[in-house]
Image (cartoon, rainbow, N blue to C red; front, side, top):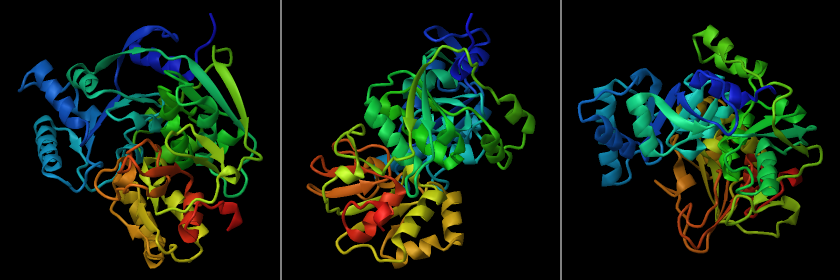
Length: 422
């Protein structure tokens, strides 16, 4: 029998049996996450399944965060927050409430994700945690109700697509450009229910923030997960955040060389900045093919590109220049920790002096929630992960996805600008 892929090994451990692609297994969940948008339905479903006074299977393995509508921007949002706070108190669940930031940033930085673990969350971008070598995937709120009650969930073990990223990234070309190019080539449904393993020379050199950007967007090509094999970079990141060193070492799992997997190759030596044009994430073109496009708004942030390294890169590209006249720039660090890094490095002051708005850590304009909505006909250059019709406001608005470098360059020119030209 052939060897196993990384994902097959993780499912074998979680199901306590040999697990192969295509098989259905009942797997034990290592950590479950809910947030303020999807959490209320999960709580309601749990009460319907287990009863109003029932206790969740293991409160220490459930994490709650508020990030989409924070602070509450409507009475309904406030009611949802009250409901979830009450549930967290009753059950003894850790609740980060409204002050910590975007769930997909907070979960890894607070040590809730270990390599080799099986993590689920009621958000499609839960796949972000694959950057740390976990099999992490989004599930529905009703599925989460079942997890709350039993600690287990049925899965079909996915086949693996190895995405080989070779070469060396040119200056001012980032992992965001890489993943946009991969999605553009594979298509929005080209990796449906596959476990995408990011491998290769260029992938192995990526930092954890760069890897998080890659894994975060795996769902945009239909993947069940986007995962990096854990390595020294993973261990160094986790040692600062996880007290149990043995747990880190136990999670260092690698796929077998003779495992059955499909492989596709990309070389990034000559990659240029990429833009996902409206209104689909796979509508990707090199920036040199983008006509001069005036923009009304720049959004720098989100679980895709809201980390300190992203904001620093954008700031460096702005070179102290003011935001272009007629352009609104909204900067939202992905977490309070990342915000404090920016504050100490003087980035908040630089952005505000340039005319940008720096907001408290949250999802911000990404889903057209609390603020930053676009009006009809307006164009936004965004470092987030989706540009669907109506995603950030009016269905008659236009969203272009790009890297933080491109966002910084474009903010000071007022049109979509190649960061290599600044």
